[in-house]
Amino acid sequence: MKKLLFLLCAITLITSAQTLFAQDTEAGKTINAGVLNGKAISLPVPEYPEKAKENNIRGSVVVEIVIDKVGTVESAKAKSGHPELREASTAAALKSKFEPMLLEGKPVKVRGVLVYNFGDKPARSKTAISGKPTLGVINGAATSLPEAEYPAAAKAVCAEGTVNVKVEIDANGDVLDAEDV
Image (spheres, rainbow, N blue to C red):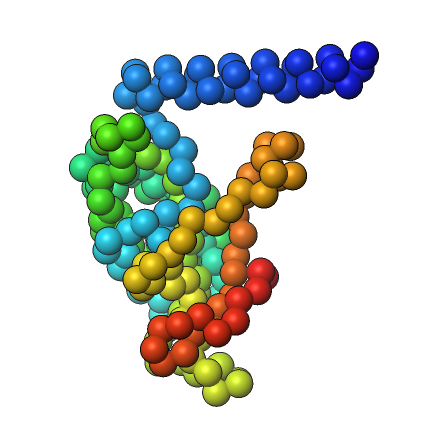
């Protein structure tokens, strides 16, 4: 009986969430879209602040953005990362451009995040110890980026989040190896 009650509660929550999502969309509210680096048509690289370089400050900065219906970033705010890196990341995020995001064929306002990496090294000129160049987040450079399959087990528990994947790409742009990190 407890299992049946839990299942009914879960179905009710999912149905309520779907209804709320539909209402928000019809009312013109903002849709949550997760990590948006790969969706940008223009994703400027933030300036690495000199003070941060001198002090060997590294790491990722997550910037929450809101994109209007025509693909312009209308607001950006750093949500995590070293304070010395946040201003540069926010400035770069505000310069990003996106194709209009569509839901059922209609442009919608979208909220998501951009992730900027400082240090180990998003710069294209840097070479890793292995002798292979390291590029940081490269989603925007992909000519094809298939949508990941949402595993049934994860869907069943409404799991969500970001999965980072390290890929090795040959000179032709073909993926040689991929692993989650």
